[in-house]
Length: 431
Image 1 (cartoon, rainbow, N blue to C red):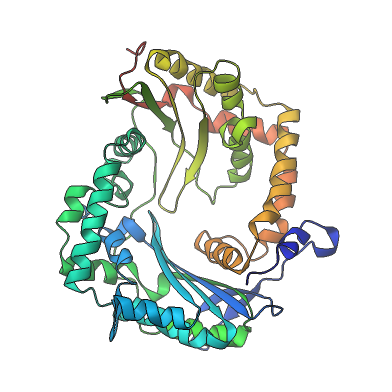
Image 2: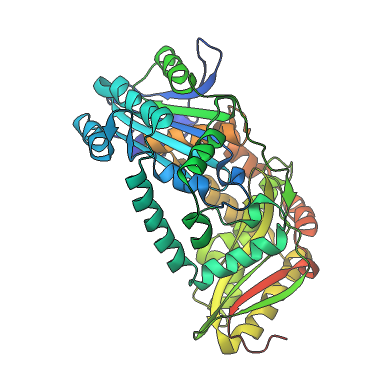
């Protein structure tokens, strides 16, 4: 019951070169974005609330994640089973997710049942029961999952890297918390997390499907009407700022996980698009990336290596990770340094750029593969302060990037002398 894939694919053709995003203003003056599509009697609504794990108290990491996991565990007069049965009877779904910067709510409904499903979403959002029995069960599940993750070298590398570069900032804490922090969270602290995570003036709403702008405006006011204004302090912006060097965390096993990086670039920076393409060429483009070619294909030192622009609402990092045998860890780490030097010194060619531009412009329409995807994109665009016409000009922005732009941004972004490495394992050849 999603928008047809043909519609999404059509966005790449001259005949369907644009997607019509309507800005909607509710009767009470709230904003939302809408893509109307009435051929199928189905609608998706996405609501993003800014804050997420970033509003967790320093000693209660995971409070927002635990609270979010409990929202579908009963609301109002409905217990957990009753709430699930009510949604099932309407062939609808309401789901919640939490992350580093936000909590999101996704509503999917048939047109004929839309208002009832929205009512259930609002019930979970504003009248979640947080029953002691549900808290005990979900908290125990989270603790068990976190205990497993705490033994995962990838999780260890990611967390140590964050602590080194975001010391004293919310990003130094694990978004889902730790076994110890989650085990201590009380019901009162869950209620505090709920009040901190949901505010009407930090909400971003996108919708797609069989709904008019007028109806969406009314729903927006219903969803946000009983929520307070923001009452939790948000973090100040912080670029990654670890001292350069290598941190080794002893961990048994035949391989070492190596996470590496340094400061990145904000998503609202004028150079973000060249940086985005640069990352695609360097380490973000799967098997075609420079790092995959040099470290996997040419030398066989890893099964996979990637980089990403970890550009978030309150901070940024240019970061990557891979695994390699303990005995080749030193060689592989040195090669990563060399490749950052290659990048900083203008190694990217016009052929590299053209190939990346062709891929990125061709793949972009595939993101719009259904109501749910489109609604999510619309909410995310607002959350990131992208303009209304971004989806229609984005590929033009990609094509407009020149090799001079790439080289200028590479010199600005890539800093081999600033790299911080976190190695989890029993590596050889690293001093």
